[in-house]
Image (cartoon, rainbow, N blue to C red):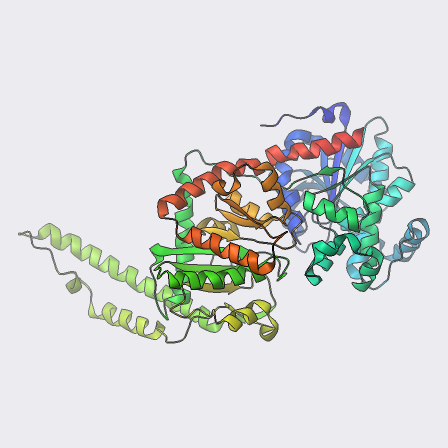
Length: 601
C-alpha cells in the first residue's frame, strides 16, 4: 500500500475542483470517483473536493456534516456568514472524502458583471445564450471566492488547487491576477477543439500542426470555451494532461506543452486465486446467454457453448470511437469464418447512447415469452423431481422409470403452446430499440449496406443496444461491469481518444481488449507494458495506416482470437488479470504526486 508522501507534511491542503464531482455527466466522473480512495489514503483530512450542487439526484451521493472546525469547513462557514448558500459534507463513494458543493444559480443575477470583468481583465468575450457557459461561469466565480477565503485562513500553509477541464477552470486566470495564494494545477482531459476537429476532419493528425485555433473555434461556435481552456493552460503553475497523445494536441491547439502526464486508472479488484476469474466470467456469461436466447432463438438457434461475445461501447462518435472500423472488421471476420466453415458464432454488441422512442416491442415480447418458457420448464422439473424420487425409492427392480409419464398433460400442452407462440420466421433485429433517427443512423446504414443483418448463415451476429446497461434495463438486468465480465473481448480501435476508459474497464475485469495507438491508453501500453499482446491487450496500429488496412488488420486479429481454444482463452484472461495491477490508482497516483511536488516548488 502507498504511504502518505512528504508533500502532505506541514499542513499542505489539496483541493480538487471538477464539474463532475457529485455530478455524473461523463468520463471525468469516473476518473475522480475511482481515484478518491487512493487520494484519501495519501492526504487524509487534508483533502477536499469542490463541485456544483446541480445534479437532480445529488442527495443520493452527498451527506451533509455539521462540523465546521477543519480548514475547509471554516471557509464554508465564512461564506455562509456572507450570505452564500454552501453545502459541506461527505461524498458517499469509497473513501468518503470531504466535499464542498456550490449552487451556481445563486449568483445568476451577477452574470453580466462577472462576464464584463472577465472580458476586461482577460479579453474573453462571452455570449449570453449558452446555458452551460453561464453555469460554469457562476460556479467558477463562487469557487474563486471560496479559495480566496481558504487561502486567507491558511497563510502559513500551502494550498494546492487542482482544476479538471475548462468547466472547472474558469477562475484560474482571475486567481493568478488577484494573486490568491494557492498553487494551481490544471488538467485537460481532452481539448475542446481537438474533439470537434477529429470528428470532422478525417486527416486530423496530419493537419494538427496547421490549424488556426481562433478560426476553428469560431467555426464550431466554441470560442469562449477554447479561450478559457487556453487561459487555464497558460495561467496554471503546472499544466497537465492524461496522455502523450493529448500532449501533442495541447501543444498545437492550446499553445503549451504540458509539464506532467497524468494517466488514468481504476480501482482494480484483485482475486486471491485464478479460478475465481473464470467463475465470475462464467456467472455473468450465463446472464448474457439469457438475452441472446431471447433475442435469437425464436428465429434460429446456435451452440451457446461455442459462442463468443465481443463488444464495443462509448459515446456515439461514429468515427472517433472507431465504430466504423469495428463494423468493417466484423464484416471481414464474418466472411473469413464462413470460408473457413467454422461452427463458432460471434455475437458483437454495440453499446452506446442514442435517442429512441422505445424498446422494440418484438424484442420485449420475445424476452417475455422466453421467461414464460423457463417458468414452465421449472414447474415441470419440480413435478418430475418429486415423482422421480418417490418412484425410484419404491422400485423393486433396476429398471429406470419413464420420465415422460411424470409430466401432466396440462404442463405438456402449456409448454407446447408457449413454444409455438414464441417461434418466428423473421430475422432477429440488429437494433433492440426503435430509434428516433433510424434512417440517419450510421451504424444501421452500414449494416444495411453490407447486409450484415443477422441472417442464420452469418457467423457474426450484431446487437446494437442504444442505451445504458443497468439492473433496471429489462433486456439485461445486470450492471455494466457485470456485462463486461461476461464478455470475451472488448473492441475499441478509437481514432480520437485522449485516454480511453472502456478498454481499461475490460482490463480491470480481466477481459482481453483491443485499443489503438491513437488513444492515450494504447500509447501508454506501448510505452509501459512490455510484450503487450501476450498480456491480452492488443494495440492496433492506426497512426500510420489507412482505414482499410487497419480494418483488415483488426479482422485478422479477431479471427486469430476466434480460433483460440477454451484453454487458451482462459490463460489469456489470467494474463490480463495479472497485468491489470499496472493500472491501479495505488500505482498511478504517483504521477499526481509528481505534479503536486512541482506545484509546491
